[in-house]
Amino acid sequence: MREILFRGKHIHALPKNEHLDGTWIHGYLCDENYINSPELKGEFLVDPETVCQYTGLTNKSGRKIFEGDIIRYTDGLIGKEKMDEVKYNETHAAFCRLHKSEMGFQYLFIDEAVANKCEVVGNIFDNPELLKGAQDAEEAQFLDFASELETPAAAVLKEGLKNLCKAAGVEVSDGKETP
Image (cartoon, rainbow, N blue to C red; front, side, top):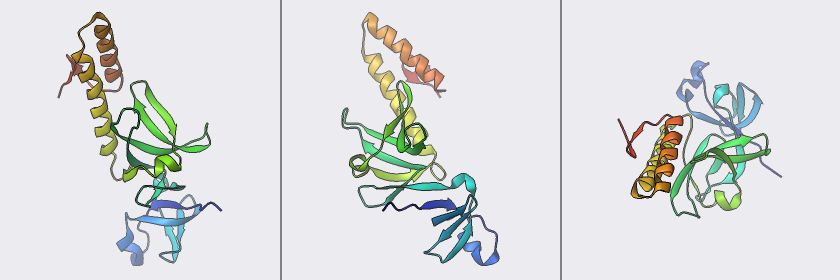
């Protein structure tokens, strides 16, 4: 049977729980504001914006993967390291990796084979900068690739890549990111 667990960041409400303020509470969702934690033996007030469900999957070191986690893995097709957010997709009725590529954002399925090869490196609440850095690096790689080409088709490719970066909010000049 599938284990249905949630986690959320504790909000300090009672003096006896002050030491837990801002820590992650894991357990069973009572309502959108409370998680019952068998480990801590009680029901705890959590920030509803941080409530995430357990996917039923674990990473290569056995750590549970929750929605909102940021996972790092190596793309088998191109051999490059990637980082994606784990997110529930209602259209697919499944937990997926929200992946940013040259074509925009895509939902890619996450299954046991992918989970067993990835590593949870943070989450979108505590470490949002991890995704920003990964996206900037990926865009810079495309621009570097295009700048090495010197054909008429490459000029069109370069211009298209610049436009994609600008649409994503990254300013570029001659294939290099500007400060």
